[in-house]
Image (cartoon, rainbow, N blue to C red):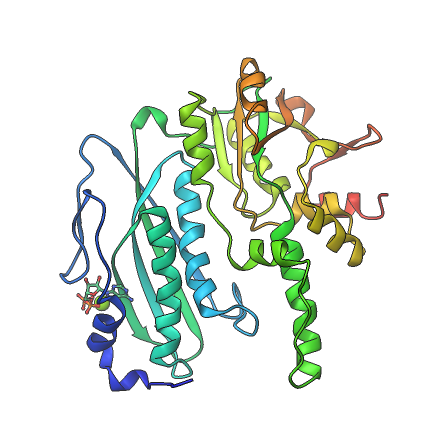
Amino acid sequence: MQRTDIAKYGEFGLIDHLTQNIKISNKSTQKGIGDDAAVLSYDGLKTLVTTDLLLEGIHFDLTYVPLRHLGYKSAIVNFSDIYAMNGQPRQITVSLGVSKRFAVEDLEELYAGIQLACEKYNVDLVGGDTSASLTGLTISITCIGEAEEEKIIYRNGAKENDLICVSGNLGAAYMGLQLLEREKTVFAGADNFQPDFSGKEYILERQLKPEARKDIIDILAQNDILPTAMIDVSDGLSSDIKHICKQSNVGCRIYEERIPLDYQTAVMAEEFNLNVTTVALNGGEDYELLFTVPLHLYDKVSAIKEIRVIGNITNPSLGECLISRDDTEIGLKAQGWNSLEGNE
Ligand code: ADP
Ligand code: MG
């Protein structure tokens, strides 16, 4: 593939080149890229702001992550945070630190992924910053979104007896990562080795090209369901439900048998000798929505295909626990991982 030295464009030429075909589609974007600052307008709505910093070698590994996927995922994780507040993402800014190792074509790939995510979720790219760096690639994305004040959902609103619900399934992204890491070591040993990923596409996609659950936010709104608390599952179910419990000052019971799992996740966990419940509890990067709703909405939420009721909120004195398949109570601690190891 052709590799064009970034120096050939210079900083301003590079920004122009990467952003030349970016279009604005939200009316709240009054001025996008090109001036000293973007101008936004959210009449009568609240503004939501979230940001993420991604460092090569810490948050991503370019040996198996294509730059286009990295761009897509970097944008998606920010959208997910806005949806987790029950808002709609509208704009992002993208800041890059780029070492000499990267060519113009690499950044084109990264931007193709970012722009694809923006188009799919109707978000405008309105600015950023670009700098040379000594080593590696650094990506910082800030996302701005909107919400009606009374619709914003915080982590601190869960009440005793509320139902705990989660979208989609859990643990798949983590098993995708394990698979990629394993093949990476094999890769290093043999030239021209092409790993066979057939039958494992779903878990790889969950790791490399995750989606944010805008669909769930829309379905909840259509059904007049306003959760009492919500968070997106980025660190893992165990740690994320604990955030809700701590901030809401409540306890919880999660039923192991109700945790939604995909078939490929279970197969891969077995192959790696991992307890699949442990994977679902602690895997992370699922970007599913975890939320609580009042008990009387049981029939309504249960009727939604992509949502599963997995437990209930309790008095804080009962703590945060998992009820295992054989009906024992296990504390959802940071050591939840250890206490589950060896089960089954
Ligand atoms: P300044 O010197 O005022 O920081 P820049 O030359 O860095 O301005 O940026 C010029 C314009 O290009 C601004 O609108 C900025 O938001 C935008 N921009 C800079 N870098 C990026 C990037 N990586 N992606 C998108 N827009 C960018
Ligand atoms: Mg700048």
